[in-house]
Image (cartoon, rainbow, N blue to C red; front, side):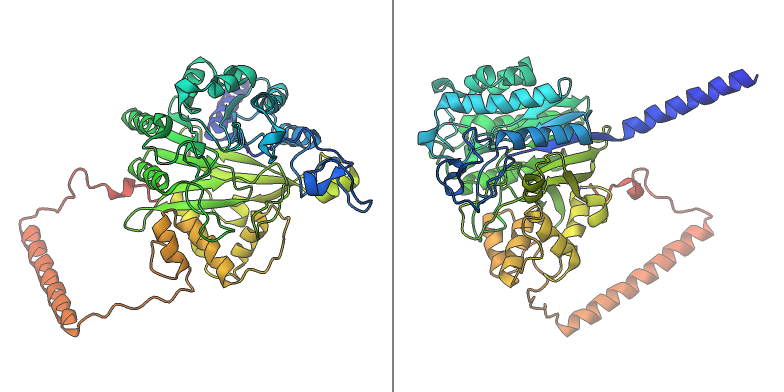
Length: 502
C-alpha cells in the first residue's frame, strides 16, 4: 500500500512539473552584430579600428571599442553568453544587421554573404538543436540600405539562402517565401505564428523602393497572413529590423518613408487583436513604442532591443552602447510575453580584464518596471510612470537606453519630450503635435492642457436626467418585486470575462 502511494505521489509530482514547464517558455533576441572582420587591436579607432597608426594611450581592446563595430571575439562572446545563461531556449530571434558600418567600396556582395554566413554558422554551432528565426537588416544588402524589391531581377535573396546558410535554419516552406522578398511566416507552436518581415523595404534610405505602392508585395502578404491567423484563432509575433515611428534621440528623425509608416500602422491597428508581440532592432538603443487607437486605448507594443555592436553613431548627439543580449519569458499557450531580462557586457572592464565571459544582468522588467506582462496596457502604465524627467523610473530608462554606456545623464525638457513622444506617437503628424506641446493620445504631463468650459445650464439638465433615471429604476424595481420576478442579465452579458490587459 505504501509503495502504491509512493508511486502515485511521484507520478503526481512529475505531472505537476510538466504542467508547470508548459506554463513558461524562454527565447533569446539578439540583434545588430555588425561583425567587422577587419577589426584590429592595433588599428586606428578613427577608421573603424582597422589597420593603421594609433596613439599608445588608446586602448582598442580585443573585445571591441566604442568607436568601432564588433570584432569576432565579441560576436562569439555574446553567443557563448547566451548559451551559458540559458542553453536551451525554445527558439532564438535574430533581428538583423550582421554587416559593419563601412563604405560600400570596402565590401562586395560576396563579402556580405560571407559575413552573414559566419554569424549564422556560429549560432548554429552553439545552438545546434534550437530553431533560429532571422531577419535581414538595412546593412545586410549590397550596397547598404538598397534592399531590392524586384525579386525576379535580383539574386540577392537566393544568395542569402544559399551562401549564408539560411536555407538550413529556415526550412523549405519559409525559404520559399523568403525568396519572394526577404520575408516569411512560420509557426512557433500550433497557436503562435511568427512573421519575419523585411521592413528595410520601407526604410527612407532605400532609394530602390521610394514611391512604390507595395515593395515586394509585402503589405498584401502581411495582411493575408494576419487574416489567416484571425480565422484560425492564432496569435502572431512580428519580428523585423527597422521599426516604424521616430528615433528617440534625434528630434523628428524617422526610419520609414511617410506613406509606408502610415500603411504599416494601419495594418497593425486593424489586426491588433491578433498581434501579441513585436520585436525590432536597428536603433542600437533600448526603448519601446506603444500604439494607440483613435480613442487613446493602447493596442500595440513594440520592443526595441539594443545591439551587440558598441559602435558610436555618427549622428550628432547619439552615443555608443555596451553590448547587449535579451532573454524573454513567455506563455507558450497564449503567446503573452511575461517579461524579459537584459544582459550586457561592460566593454571597458572586459578589455581590461581580458575576460569576455562577464556578461551581467542589467535589469529585469518585472522588477524595475513592476509589471507582470509586456502587453500594451501594462507598458502604458510604465509610460505613465515617466511623468517627469526627475522620476526614478524615467532615470532608469535613460540609463538602460544606452545599456549603461552613459549613466546619470542630464536630460532637459527637450530631451524628455523627445523620448516620450517617440514612445507614444508613431504617427508622424501626431509626433509633431506632441513635440510642439499639443494634445495627442498620450503626451508629457508637463504639457499645459486648456480646460473645457461647460455651460452652467448643462449641469441642471444632467441633474434632472439623473433624477429621472433614479425614479425609473425605483418604479421598475417595485413592479418586479410585486410580481415576484427577479431581474436577470442577458445570457451574453458576462462582462467579467473581458481581458482588460489585452
